[in-house]
Structures are given as structure tokens and as C-alpha cells.
Image (cartoon, rainbow, N blue to C red; front, top):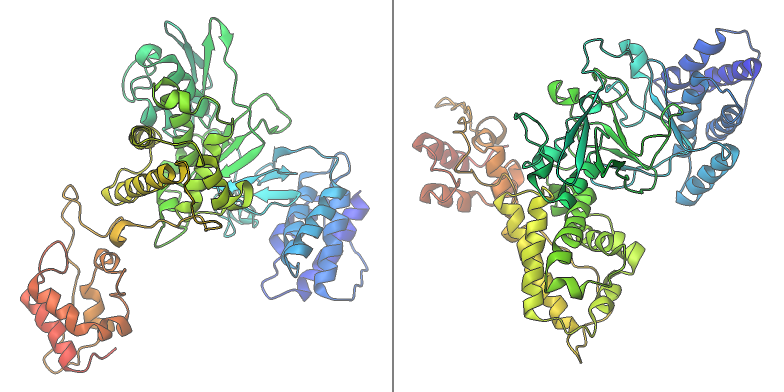
Length: 557
């Protein structure tokens, strides 16, 4: 294998010189291979299109990687080559074909995660990887996920760990692993602080049982046993467990998946083996590079202010809600907690399919601006109409459904700001009334309509107003021009408008756009003089005079 790896290294060096500037293979392919075989003399000559050579190199590396005992450096290099080869695919069909061919080469390898020494997570044959919104991330048969927190191509590794001197060692002063048992009347909760990622799911969602800052931390009799079990199962790190009558409680049965959580760890579910250990159904892996219990997340991402780039400057309802995971939590709580206990809704949903909560979450995700999951997986609008046809739903049922789904949203931790809840409740009211209408005998709903798209009510978005509970905001620093100095938009007018002002008027125009403000200058000045803009207080006279002067001088850029 050493000779074959030396050949890979030589070909990678030759290819690196022919690729785009920046030596893209130097840190992700050449470095890990050179660490294995040194700097051998190799007489290699290759011709042909670069894209074809990358593809052949990726396949050869994958064949070596598929052999027993493949070293970490080879696996890391293979991951980078597979990714690069797939980037060269000309279209979606070619991409799918390449991934299938690579899967065929290493198909005998099981799904697993191995932790490279002072390096990335080496993920073999991943089934599913999503971002924190539940949106799929493109997978390849061999992947290297960033562990140091410094990659510029997160979640993929770009070799930054080597440049930064990243260490995967555990901190000797870390919280030790210890299972503490808290016995209740019907259920015993087991807690292992040593592997807790401090995601706060338990304390935020069931504070009567998991009591932040109190002793004992766990009060098992603080809520119904079903709620305790649900909270334990929702723990993403695996720190919590439960026992009933001395028997260990079962975990959820989930497909193997990795979630790249927002500003936090990789959340692994479905029993993916970690360094060969297949005893855990779920666990959280450090992604910021600072855990005291590497590779397990210890919550240090909060303290080092680890943050991902925002997905959108103007989030839709799907993003603001927390994506598919949040909507799934809500629908699961609704159908598992509230419906069975309700005398009206319980009989109505007694025969629902096991995946009904997932279907409703997919519908809401698509309606709120997320991926078209309901259309692609469940049949779209026509299927939803068929689900309600002939059921003769009543207003009493509808009102109870609307009431309890709002409670489930609270329990699931969906945002409580006025803007989101206004939009959420508006859709619940609208959608549930349409469902009642469509369910009546003789109803003829229009066929083949798209899934509806819902948005912020009257374009009132989060951040577009000043909360009465917010601390006083600092006034923007504005440089007033000299008497003989021309007034310009960039230097004098744009700084008058805060980010909040821009958001509040984004439904009409962009206050940071010279063209937009010029077009609407007279109307803006009128509102400024009337005191109806901005929404938290009138401008001082000198700012009004400055804006008027800018108009008089011809609205210079």
C-alpha cells in the first residue's frame, strides 16, 4: 500500500500545479499523504483534461481506502479527492453517477465516524447530513468534517487543523464522567455531566424537572412521566437516560444521521459507531475545537463565541422558527402529548398513520418557505386536500386544534416574538378554516394548486421595531457637513438610517440604497417631518435639515 500511496502523492503534486491558483490539494491531499510516505522520488507523467485526472485519482484513492487497515491520512486525502471530483461533475446526473460509482468501490465499509488524531472526523458512507434547519447537505461516500472550528469550508475540513496546530487531547480538568441517578416515584433519571453538551433542551423545555441552578438538578416527579421520558430522549448528547422499575429505558429508533447544529456541535443519531464503539444511539461531537472532553462536545462553543455565518439576512418563517427540527418537535409534542389526552381530538386522530407528525411538519416547512418536502415526498396540495375530504370537520374541532398547536409551539421552544407568532397564528387560523371548508360533504376544492406560501404579517419582521423591553439604543454617529461641503448619500445620509430602520421599511424600499432613497426622497422627508418615521422617535432638527439639504442639492450619491 505504501508504494500505491506514493504514486497517489506524486500524481496529486503534478495535478496541484495544473489546477487553479492557490494549490487546492496542498493541505487536504498532499499534506496527509506526505505524512504517511515522506517525500519519495516518483517519475510520474500525466496528460489529459484536469477534470478527468481528478476523477481517476479520486477513484484510485477510494480503492486504496477500501482496503483493510487504511491509515487516517489516506482516508482524509480520499475525502478531499472525492469532494473535488464531484465538484467537477458537469450536471446533477453526472454528480449522482459519480457518487454511486464511489459508493460501489467502498460499499463494503459500514457507516461509521472515526476521529483522526489532531485532525478531522472521518465519516464513512454517511446516510444523511443536514444543517440546523434540517436541509440536506450533499454527502459523499468518504467525508472529512472539520473538528478544529477553523475551516473556511465548514462543515468540510480544509486542512486548517494542521496550520493551526490543533490538538485533540482532552483537558485534564474536564468534568469527569459519572452517572448520577435521581430516583422518582415512577421513573429514575440518570445524568452524566461529563458528556453533557449544555444544549439546554431539558432545562428550557421541562424546567419543573430539570432545574437550572437548583439542587438536586433533577426532580423526576416534577412532571408527568411521559414528559420526563420525552425530555430525556430529546437530549442530544446522551447525557440523560431513564429507568423504569429498574430497567433501562429504550432510545428512539432513528436512521443514522448527522445534524450540523447552529453555532454548536455535530448531533449524531441512529447509532453510528464512533471509533468502533456502537453502544450509543446518539451523541454530540465538538465542532468549535475547544471542548474540554474532545471529541465529545462539552459546551465550550458558548464560551468561545463559536458562530456560523448567518444563513440569510432576511429570514423567512421556516428559518426563524428553527427549521424542520423545530417543526418536528412541535408536531411530535402535539400528536403525542396533547391529542391523546383531548376528548375532542383524541378520537379524531386515533387511526392516524405513524408518520402523520412528520407529514404535518413537512407541510408547515414548505408553507413557511423551507424545502418542498411535502410536494416531493407526500404528493403536495392534492394529497393534503384528499386527507381532509369527506371528514366533515367541525368548528369545535378546528378551534381546539388551533388552541393546542399553539401550546405545542410553546413547549417545542418556537420563537415567541410578536412578529413570528402573528404570522404563525394567522396561518393556523387560515389553514385550519380552509381544511374545515374542504372537508364538508359536496365541497369541490380547486385541484392541482401549489402548497401555499406564508410570510410575515404586513411584512412585520423581527427587528423591525424597538421592543419596549430593549435597552436604549445608541444613536448613530452622523457627521454633519460643513456649510460649503456638498451633501452626499454615502457620507451623510446613509449613516442616518440604522439597520432597524432599514428592516422596518424593507417591504417598500431599501434605506441603504441611493437609488431607492432618491426615488422616494420627498415621501421619506414628509414622514420624517411628521414624526411617523422612524418608529421609535422623531429625528432631531439638524438631521431633518440635512436630509432636506441633500434633496435640494440634487441627491448626490
